[in-house]
Image 1: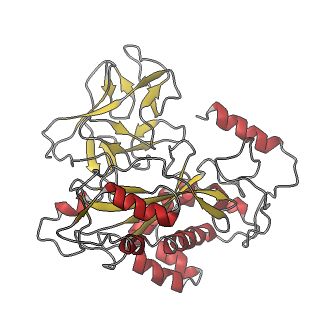
Image 2: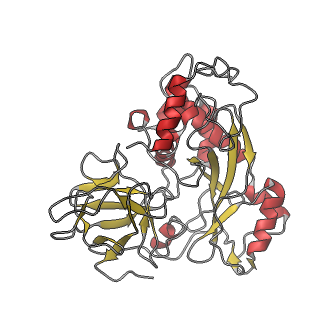
Image 3: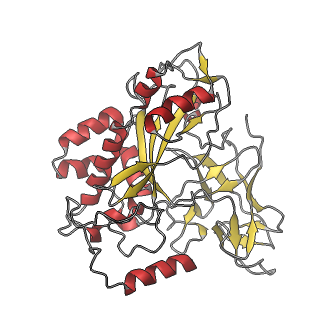
Length: 407
């Protein structure tokens, strides 16, 4: 399913004959015009997505502070990833299965990128100890959604060249955003006794980055993640990243924000995953599952992911995903968004990451506030649903647990 605006955009690309924009860029980015506008600021369509990041024109460089159990150096936030968000704050994930990789280290070694690989092992750390798994996840989820490093954008493409470019640029951006040093310069350092205000952290980061920075707290009111937002002029490998204000507000309290020391924990391993949940989640569902129901609508979702108003609701398992957010699964298999944009569950579906708010029970996807369907199903019909409000019938999706959630 393709929206009207995207169809319009594709028609412009197909019909343009302007020689000003090259159909591909070289490794040094020399074929991208210098006067191309910043992503998300254009007043007319840009015909070449190899020089203009679209639709994910907001680039986020994200960092972790893993304190329990400690991950990475004691005086450094670690790299989380480089993410393309759409201009309206929504986002896509796992965009092209044909580009996905299974071993990031193998790709880097094949290109002779030993130095880059060593640096990634220093700064791009997985809290469970398998850095390669994190890198594979980040590229497959986010890197495959970047338009300016598609294989067709390279004049002499070598398989997985775009993977190397994604990892290199992620590290380069991270190196230029030394969060720990910026906080330290403002007197904000890890401590078991001191706490800080939202204003203190905001001013310390904004004064260095030049724009508002999103910082995230876990359920213990402890600082655990930083997101730096950018627009981009040109391509991912060679473009100019321009800071912009964060498009979302911090979930941290106004006062009493902890900045814990990185140290071994005496608590159970469950604490580790507490720092990996989404910004809206405050609890981890455990037990025998629950139902996915539609707020203010009859019926529920059955095991294939479709809306049904007659029969028994399917049982869904909601569990924390390895690298943030939540995953859903039914008796059919894992759940995700299929090639037509519909919610689906089954053996051929790629598992997606969802957001879950335990206080309301709302389940969302891709930064969209809700879901929609083309129509309300008749008694025997099964109707697919999509994230967002593009279709006629709009609603919230609620996970109704069959057990008590531990707060």
